[in-house]
Length: 162
Image 1: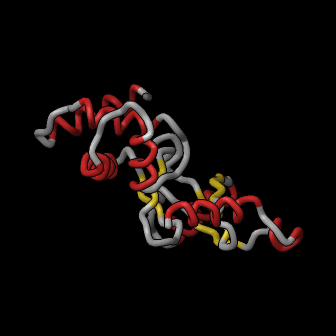
Image 2 (image 1 turned 180 degrees about the vertical axis):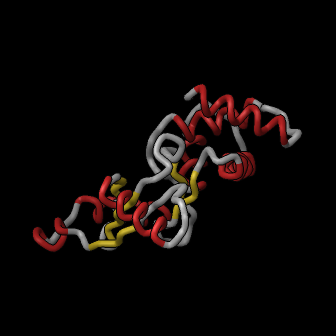
């Protein structure tokens, strides 16, 4: 885990009068060991499949703590569950393209968007602190080929859940 995250989290936990527990550390390690977006349930499933020991409640509380500490970002990718972005600390201003056909999420940065954001906010008398953009689009793979590997994965995953 990044030492900046460790330091900020330790300070935040102390300021809240909480203890640093092995279970909480296991959840934090699981979150920051990958760069992928995740839901709380996906993280819980990932932790359950390892030797790490943490309850579902600990997973949810740790996620809330990290969001409150500014170390994890809650993003709206559509759907009925909150999604979290562990890449937020390294690039707080980034954007997401979401395929409305297959659900694929592509994270991207673009200096033109940042420049436009800067121009708009300054013209209106503000200074930008961070920005994010969510673009919903249709999948070219599905439209051009009649099938999309991501859509197939999504359907198979949905069948496993039910």
